[in-house]
Amino acid sequence: RELNEEYFIHILQKRPYVTVKIAMSLNGKISGQKGRYIIGKKSLRKVHQLRAENDAVLVGSGTVLADNPHLGVRHVNGKDPLRVILDSRFRIPLSSHIFRDDHVLVFTTDSADLGKIQQAKKSGVDIIVSHKKMPLEQILRELYRRGVSNLLVEGGQIIFISFLKAKLADRVLFFIAPKV
Image (cartoon, rainbow, N blue to C red; front, side, top):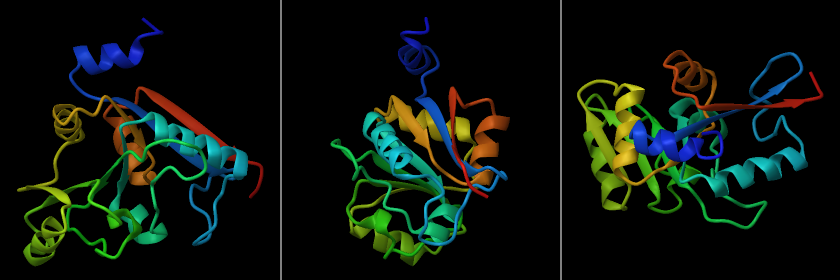
């Protein structure tokens, strides 16, 4: 069962296998100064390897607004995962690095700016609009439906806690930097 854990989760539970990655300092902080990584180069390569091994990477709008991440594979060889963004009000700017191509899926609500949604759709971004915030279980079912068999969650504190509380994290990886 352990050797085929990802397969069993994907096939039997009809959702992606979820890995939650948390990078933190010795004093428990999970974000560094703007534009600086908490983890070192070796750990950064490992994170990029994880991205290359997963079909999709998920973050919330807070991470995009705070860090403007690339969320691609750059420090190792591999294919960029689908970038999945949870943004109930679609606050993230369309100039964000994640919109560098159309390999993006945004989950938002009908409280978001319709003009912005239409503009993003015109540039090829896939957007799912619901009446209210979609439960994580429903998001995972939608990702499964789209062929995502494994998902790397790299969001901030709210996203991490949400996945842990919902008992949807199949694996949790901590990257702990030896600094305060």
